[in-house]
Image 1 (spheres, one colour):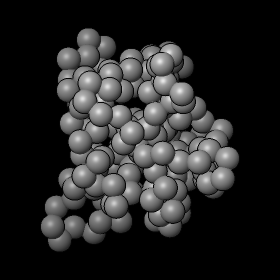
Image 2 (cartoon, helix red, strand yellow):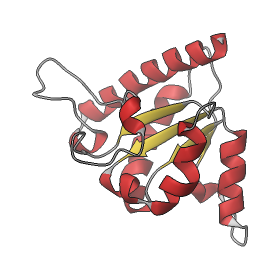
Image 3 (cartoon, one colour):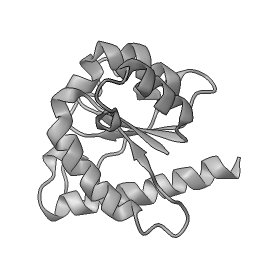
Image 4 (cartoon, one colour):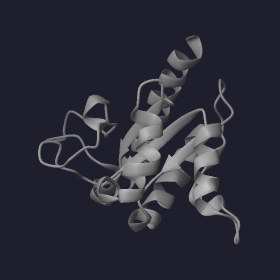
Length: 157
């Protein structure tokens, strides 16, 4: 299971990104992807406990990085530590919206390779939110390839 961590302020952009990524992941030859995010919590459930249980059960975390994500106290206190501490779950950071890699507090993510779309004609790599049209499709495809390679490495251990 893939745990999706994102800031609530980015809900719509995260949903559009996940739709594209799920389209790429669905026909995978190697892995069967299931995704969990907080909208899977049923009304009346204890949301914090549900999130913690999902993190405990997931195989990998897909963290959708943005300024709002980095500024979320809940993510900082209750989600990232499960992925960033020694022996934690594997994490795949994806730049959902542009951040300043030098000036933002990356909450430990500076030690991880953060996925962005990179093309020779780009002045610099792009966050998903900076992409449009076919670039968003390419972003999802390139990320899918990277996730598959990362999972191959994790499974090999």
